[in-house]
Image (cartoon, rainbow, N blue to C red):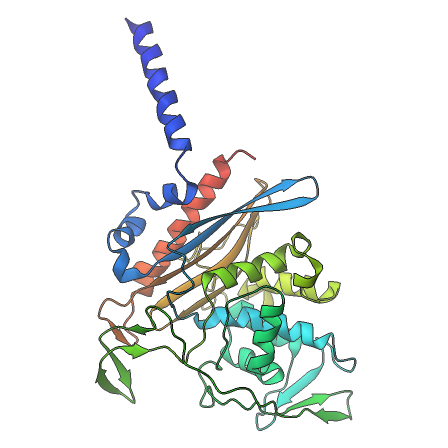
Length: 377
């Protein structure tokens, strides 16, 4: 009797496992019973979730990507917030390669601004703490049109970077000149760049909510994002793949970064704030790393490196990450966005980032990480 029970139980277990193996991995992760996942999955219309999970396999010298998508739709708009700093950093480094007199270490300042910096420092600040001013300085160097063209030329599309971040001249189509220090005593002034006028985007969900705050006054009606930046999941994933694995793409789709630039960029993307001099209490390890560890202020394990860029504004949280575990020899990519704005009022700073958004992204990362530990390669 006992033997028959064991055999029957084993047979049922094998059938169950076989059935479970046919379920797509992202679907498995989102079927988690964890409440941080469940509460979002039970109200998807409100949260506007989009996710791309990319499995990475290697065959000889080739890297193979397998994308698993959930509600990914380039025609369904979400506000990309600070994720647009990633293409700005890449495009700025590429442009530097085209100007013999400039390098990552060239000191400069924006005309009318008292802050001196270098391109290397601006890139570091963008990834370590998502600094808005650093991004805006690079945008003055590039201009919106050139930035967009550089992305599209390499196959990173659709994309439309239209404005600076959190500054009075955010929408100005003319850039400010930059003053470069060619040496200790010689400076050079760049010319202003006049960019094309911004045209309204025509996408689904481009108008959101039931009201918004403008000039400290409540305005009835949907908030219009049609003149804002646009950087959907497809383009974010495409950029990340080309930076982490450039040789997986044709030469025409590879960004023209030299070895020193690419190594610096990768280092900046995973380096934790405390490693570059920021206060570890205020800027804890996961300050700008939402997947796996975003809901904790504890130190991150040293064997897990996350190369990423997050964004959060207007109630939208997004993370675009390559996650590598050197101890267990696994790596994968995940790009995801979620809207957490239960009162449907924009620009009121009343968003559920800590209560819903970050816990969801952190747990999503943990679910996918566990699947990667179990995955046969």
